[in-house]
Structures are given as C-alpha cells and as structure tokens.
Amino acid sequence: MAIKTVQSQKPKISIRNLSVVYHDRPNNRDIIAIKDINLQVNENDFLVIIGPSGCGKSSLLGTIAGTVKPTQGGVEINDDNGNGGDEGREKKARNVAVMFQDPLLLPWRTVAKNIEFALEPRKIPKPEREARIDRYLKMVHLEEFRDCYPRQLSGGMRQRVALCRALVVEPEILLMDEPFGALDEQTRLLLADELAKIWRDVKRTVIFVTHSLSEAVYLGENIAVMTKRPGRIKEVLKVNIPRPRDFESPRFNLLQQQLWEKLKTEAPGSE
Image (cartoon, rainbow, N blue to C red; front, side, top):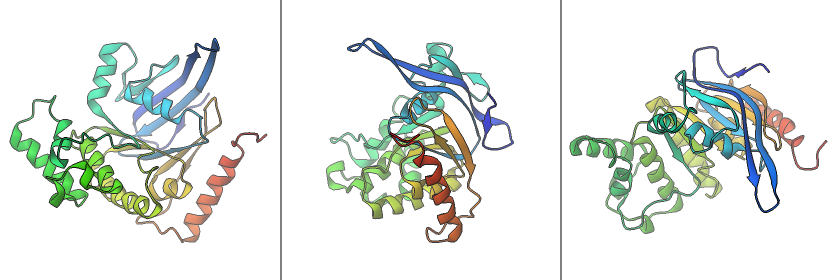
C-alpha cells in the first residue's frame, strides 16, 4: 500500500502499516481499532484527522504519543523508530505533548502553577520557567488571570490554560484530541482562531482530531479522512485556502461539502 503523503518534504512523522487490535476479554474477541494505516506528516504541518465515531482516531494519536502500542507496523518520529520498547516510547514522550477535551487542571493550583506543573520534571531554571509561562499566557490573553484558580475560569479559559501547559514544554509535536469538543460554538470559534495564530507563531507540528467539518477546514493545512472501524486513511485533502479563512467564502463551503461527501459514506449503516 502506498504511503499517503501530505507534503513533499522530509516527514516529521512516518506511520507505516500501522494496526492496533484490542482484546475484549469479557466477550473473548479481538477488536481491530485501526488497520494498515500509512501516513506521513511533515514538520510544522497542521494535520486534522476526521472520521466517524469509533474509527480509531484516539488510538492513532496514542500510537504517536507512545501510550498505545501498535499490534503491527509502527510510528517513526524524525526517522527514529519509537516503537522498539520502553526506551523508544520515553524518547517520543519528551518530544510530544497531548491536549484532551478535558483540560485536566489541578484545582488547588493557580493558572501559573498549573502551567508550571508540566515543567517541574525538567531541569529548567526558575527564571526561564517564569519567562515561558508569561510568554504563553500572553499568547492566549490570560496574563491577568495567572494567579486565579480553575474554578474562577470559564470553560474556554480553562482550555487556554491547558493549551499553555502543552506548549510550555516546547514540544516538537502537539497532539490535540477534540480539545474544543465540550465548548459552545462561539467559544470554539474564538479558540480555533487563537490556535491558528499560535500555530503560525510557534511553528510546531500539530495533529488535531475533531468531528467538526468547519473546524477541520478552518484549522487544517491538510485533512486526513478516516473510514469507519477498522479505521484506515481514506484520503488526505490539501486545504488550499489562504489564512485567515472566511467561514462564508465559496471555497470554504465547497471544501466543507466535499469533506461531508467523503464522510457520509462512512456513517454506520452506509454501504
């Protein structure tokens, strides 16, 4: 099977013949989450992954993060195979940050201390820690809330703090598993706009999972469409729309419609 390449340059991430199978012990059966995935993601790309529920999007992210062990195939980052045991997975963990739908903030810590939590295992001098915290808080416009606690913040503000915590370690790769899925539409739009600006500023490789067609088109440089379970890569679409993007533009709506045409055939019960 040919590898689907999102760009022509040397890849940051190479996924080859990747399959993940889980064993369902109560029913004594194997469940194939993803099967024979081949994909390349280049440095500083913003790749959006979209597909039907249960197609293995989170499992795919887990293999890149090193938290899910492939049953077959593997994931290479910077041409280093990260699936050769614990040492390889630890190496990947140092270069990858993950952001989830739940911000997972510690309620007894302030905003600044929640962000600093990600830096504490690292030998980074206190002045540099503070400089990084200030930098990323300014990016998400939360400087004045650095001494507040999570309970004092809105849902969108808590997700901004989670984004800062992910970025403050300055990872090579940022994995985002439906990070805005629990937010209202207005907040999602605002955060998507901020994330697009931050991505242009910090130059990181981002892989973003969503169920939202508009979010995929607004954020992605490339969009990987997955099939229903067992999840495969059906197609990778290039988003040739200049930024900042207009939700109402004909090109935006055309790509969104094309994306829907490819996805609806993967809905449960479709042929």
